[in-house]
Length: 190
Image (tube, rainbow, N blue to C red; front, side, top):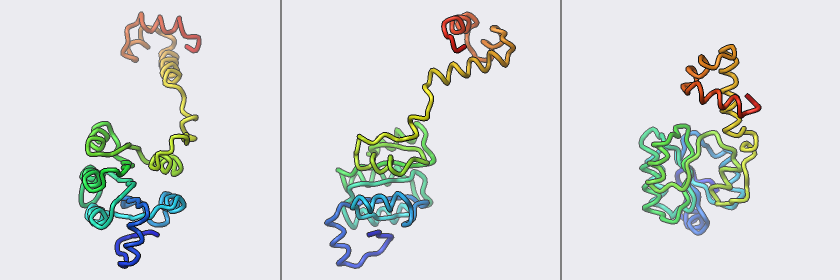
């Protein structure tokens, strides 16, 4: 089920009839939980650890799903995303990389990626997103605090570190003294 590089011609014909997922990532091997989970979903999985191997897989068969790392030894992941978009227009492509930032995400989306995710990501969430299963919620999202509570906690910590001196805390927080006073007055947490 896993096509690391070479296939026999009979196996190649059988594989092209099944839905194929291409994983372009030098860190992911055939024993990876992601690969095993995709096989459980009934997909034919092709692994590529370089840009050349990915392009070879794209020439050999149509791809329905792809997971791409941005930084490869012999090329750029954005070029691979673009090649996937050109050779398999209906392919759902996820960029899953340790090098996610806003400019990389914009480049990947413009090249044809469906989503951009930072590593590490839960395997179940990654597979659900790849297969477009919107009903799955990642477990880790429930553990993140609300942005306002993080902001209030930071303001409270700086305020207390400054000995409850509003002017000094406002300078450290880069906000106007009166704004900090209003926040302290309105928020019971502070």
